[in-house]
Image 1 (cartoon, helix red, strand yellow):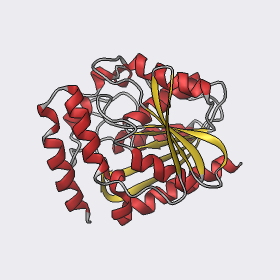
Image 2 (image 1 turned 60 degrees about the vertical axis):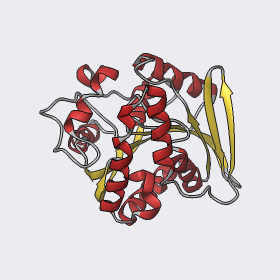
Image 3 (image 1 turned 90 degrees about the vertical axis):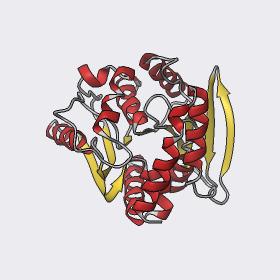
Image 4 (image 1 turned 180 degrees about the vertical axis):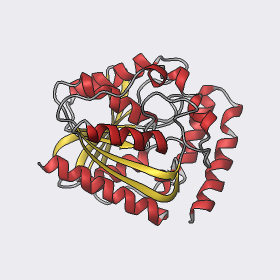
Length: 272
């Protein structure tokens, strides 16, 4: 598959999502994303569980290293689940050789951003994780979760919305994600309009972005600021890739290379 074929398939799937109720839209989104997922890695144990009212999915590789990694899925705060991002979470566990826990935090419009963040905090408090990885909207949640944790842990951020998003800070429209799409997220996460990103001392961050994404420009600006503040930030940008391409990383060489580099860098932080 090349990137144009991925864009065409994903865009066609998105076209049918807006025509139903939130429940139907979420089901269709899950099904769309799952069509790009690779088979589960050999030897990996996958277990569904729940903690209070939150559904969890555990991805446990054979001979897993110590510690658990919390994974927060994307989906624009209104979509996404442990099912839509199953392939990414499984690959993350396989690449890190660590136990990864993916969670179904509550979604808008039924839930507020505070509710979503509370779900993430409750699971993080119960684990607690040795790292937090957030994908897109989940990346925003990872950023806002970090100051609430008892101890600083490495963060893995995959094309997250950062800073105060407005038409002046965003990059150009891109396939699968326009500037208007990004701005439509702000009501679901008001901090994107009012609050700068803050991190506990000693937080280290690994970032994965894609070339064609209106979120990349503000992300790169934020990374420059974080580095000037003395933070350790690793960064790689997948050439010619678009937002959501991580779902098909196994079939897109540029995305696969950047993903492997991201996971290897994060793993090095966990080993120190």
